[in-house]
Image (tube, rainbow over all chains, first blue to last red; front, side, top):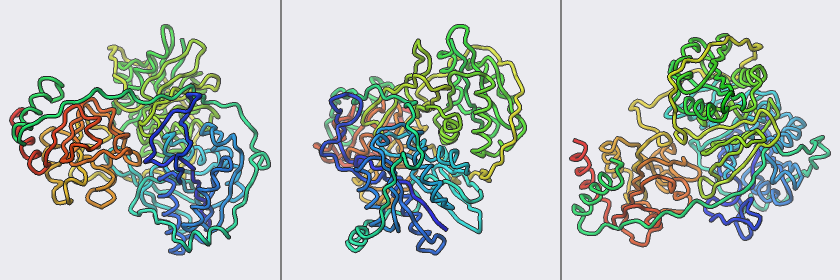
Length: 257
Length: 323
């Protein structure tokens, strides 16, 4: 069984966001870029399925300009067998459907039993590409999975919904998007990093996959930083005095209790 | 004016509050002379007519036949796409819940259209379509995005970011037939925790604990205060990674992004990814030993002190006020 894990190249979650000169996006100069954390969970689950013998081949895939190759190398370093780079610089800033269409074209050629990806790419925080891949590939999908069990041709997936866990049963092939599950993503070993340099990384031009450039459906007009919070009050005195004063302020001033 | 379609979400026969919030937003976007259609799926769907009508729906489109109870993404997306075509909707909305976001994204691909996720402000420009504000980078920044041409323009709305505006009306029920769609994945059952906890994503009050608690055994201090306040228990990434508490409680980037009325951060220093997830809370209380901790920069009220001394006193005082 083949699994393809789609990963997105995003700014580190520890990074401070500054606004670029055009006001339409973040200024990424000097910002460390990483594999989106939810894609790391997806990758970890896929590696485990390969280690247990459920999966026989693990392919990492990403869409975008030259920069996304770094995230594909990272995926290879932690355990993917090979990588596919759907190359088109325009895809890095494209809307979710354009990226999903490009990935779907490359995925159709790979025809894996399972497509894994994160529940959302951190940063844009949309969570659209996974379910869109399900639709575009005409496959069922499960969003926000935290666990999966695979039998012959079928699967059970656990997904987080508000205050509960929804247990989904379906048939393969399928698309699964991952939330944080039971497993911490592994770090790349030095041996893994060395091995990754020799693993195949195919660059496929989006145009060669028959992906037509489409006019953007979603247009980003501007981004802004949150308004600064007004300076707060520091309460002094011993624990009891401070606790009493806090409760009084919450009750009388803030009126939240 | 415009026709606006809203996907309703029902759990255990009741309409989700977030769906009613979406209906009231739809009413405003539809404008004078516009129409709001609400789509209810599955057996008993017609029961939504009064609540949806009161929130602002003119018509309730009901699809009773099909794989809708329990949830199955493919028939839901097929039904929403079909309803959008039949109602001639210029705009399609859903609640930004797990189900709403799941179905909306799949439907947007089916209709080859644009979708704005998890919006917190929304308007219909004079030229039509949608323009909305949404948090990005887990709230470290906000974006204004629009769908100028693609139709229907779609959006999911962050729960509790919009009010329900009652109208006193009832929606007219219209039966809708949609082609049968195979459900190749279906929700078989819902596992709810034995002790029903309030989910941080929906809680009006959150009390969160961090490394300052020194160990999972001391999280009872957080639970006691949360209980006294009628709130949910949150946590920093550090303690979730350390295995003190499940990931469902994590607040911040890679956890939940929250904006409750009251957020109490206990023994949390305020790493940038935690601040991203909670700094839009209305009132923030920080309790931390380190006066230089970044959490105090976003706090409305701060107590520089030992959580082990302050929390029991605070819980006592809250109980007195609430009694």
